[in-house]
Image (cartoon, rainbow, N blue to C red; front, top):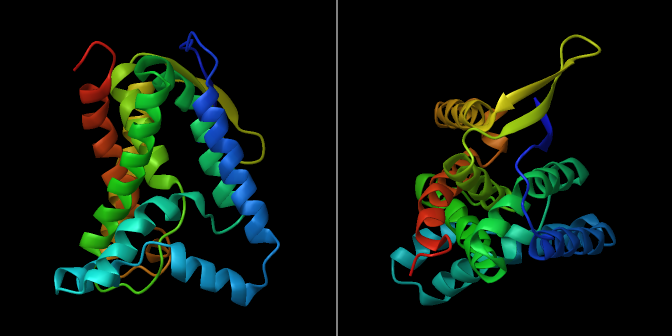
Length: 225
């Protein structure tokens, strides 16, 4: 299912949302200019590697600093065009509403915190993994979690592929995003069970970011100290 647009007006131009999209695209274009070996080195240096968190827990302060820094840098790296476009599409559709409700500064804080929470969740569950986690998926999942809390009844026009053509259906956000979250839980369960294809995606980052978004949006929304 691919969401196309929602019917909840944001009320203001989403400068931060647009700025985040532009920044992610620019970083990806820089990635695109690198050789395969150089790109692997970038992912290794700036991606969030779970083993670094484990080393930090064992007393390695340098690895702890590297992992903490990567919670920020990793969310601006992407593994391919589809990875980038999928994340930015969801951010464009749902991010403006959250930015409108939180305000620009709080939304930026919220976005970065959810991205960090997603990477941290993955690193805790997959502590032995040496594979760098990259992508804005944790932050985007946080936006979806916040949208579910603030706009559960909003209608979202969605394309549902069936055979060749598919159908355009309006789903309430609570149905669409609730189903999305259940799919993440299912895939994370398959990944823990050793299913090869499921292990290629950081599903736990999606789950952690989504839950963080549901909680943080209640703490940061306007009118709250």
